[in-house]
Length: 392
Image (cartoon, rainbow, N blue to C red):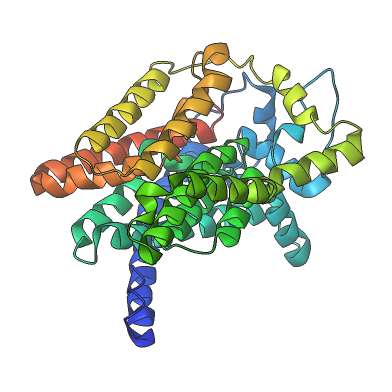
């Protein structure tokens, strides 16, 4: 946690330094599992050639850009294309590939490496911001909870996507920044700008908008209560009006990433909604390991339910979780037998808080056993993913 305003600048810097060092060490150590798994997959696992995209795997580095990573690499190298009669890469939002393209052009490195730099830098940022969030939320005495939550983030099987050429780590980082900003009562415009960045990273970023509106409502109520202790109870209509006005004024800001992408598509392809139209061509994948999809959904719902029952999660975290889970199920679940739900669940960061709470309360040997089992699953899924098997 960044210390409260009363703490000295030196204390803030020292605390942040400790968090950064701890986060760097844990992130590198836990990510070794994924790196070793990809190496094992490239050397020992037979490439699944069912999907034509598997031909893109030529060396170890290309293993990290399997599946959707292949499209992000193409966007970073060549830009967007659109064909109404087939799958087009306009389905993938621009912030992540744009950052990769910038590194690719500035350094001359391969697009795969550039995108991996973005993914791993963002994943490191997730460790840091999650640590700050937990310390602010539960207090500086919550060291065990912080460490176990970071372990959960590093070992949860579906988080292998965050070490690939995919958007998950960047999207999670932006979510955490927005939630931390609301927690620390940053200026609403700053928080709205962060939320807008999320909508340019993935469409699911829009679920932050209702969380933002709820926070604005509570923020106005706190301000009025501080100025006039009786105002919150007798003048809630005025608070509602002011909240609604600020929400309307800042709504375009919270959606600036999505609106900018739609504007680009309108200029480039003549239709700002082609990113929706091309989704019709993305729902026909074969599926293996189908049991993992409903299992992960049930685990996610169970963890969120436990967090709500034990009051480990607050209203903002529950609203965000319901939005992320609900939007994935609504738009993909019925059409694709909840395909990709484990991937969508990986960015619901409150589940790591709940896992951290559980691990910090159970005997250490049992916690070690659960972490080891999760590491095995992480290794297994990563190896299959890197060899183009249908794991989601």
